Length: 322
Image 1 (spheres, rainbow, N blue to C red):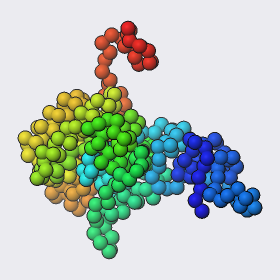
Image 2 (cartoon, helix red, strand yellow; image 1 turned 30 degrees about the vertical axis):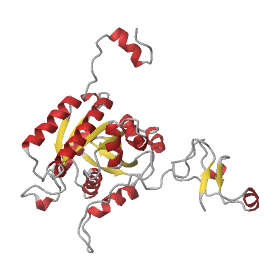
Image 3 (spheres, rainbow, N blue to C red; image 1 turned 90 degrees about the vertical axis):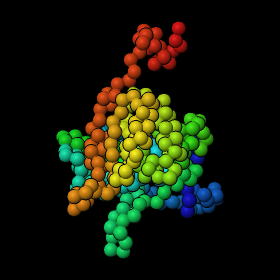
Image 4 (tube, one colour; image 1 turned 120 degrees about the vertical axis):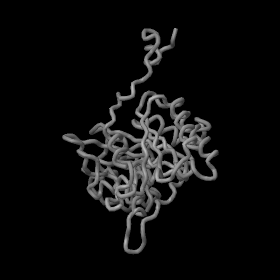
């Protein structure tokens, strides 16, 4: 039987917990079923006690409060066009950590979205039935927020909660051209909410037959991210780095990134191991990028200094500049 809540701000049961704070949905006056009023009065639903505030699948935007209310949570936004390797990157990280392979001082401590991780990483596993393949394309559907995958990591002597956004590339293509595009609100939301931003450069596309189109799309995306950045850490990530990209193309991308982003880090990653490293089955650059994502300080990329602090401070707090 399908259920829905009549509270205008509540998405139960798709969202975690009860919006008004009840320990059980059956105790909430807004919670309704699709039965008519007469059937509801005739048949009382059993009290199933406190409802677990997660399903194991990808979280929604409304679920961030469940984590951030207890601990500092870092949201990692992965920005890239369709087919650029965003989902494969996330799945590779999950599989490496599951095998106990992680950057020094970092280890798995838990996750509230194990089913969500399995949905994207299952294809990358080698099973007796078939070899590994790439995850299916992340559908744009009709959603307005990306699916969020959670990892609780032990980092040295502390615990870090991270959320990784798995968003369809079509959102970013539309958002990079028009910020207010109705079918790109998910990308706009992520650009405002993410703590760390990864911009994906697809080596395969930038070396392929459609390299001109791929370069233009990446340049548009870099410009949009640069405009929305607001001093947050940004990395340019070359995926599928086992594919050779012409040096002239690399220079063009670097120049575009320098102009749009200013200060940023650069990483090259691949699911395929470097020559001579095949027995370790760790890919290339994956652990180095993950280590940076986990450890980078929010203050490592300072915001632009104010030219007139006394006046510009009014803008920061919402005043009107004189």
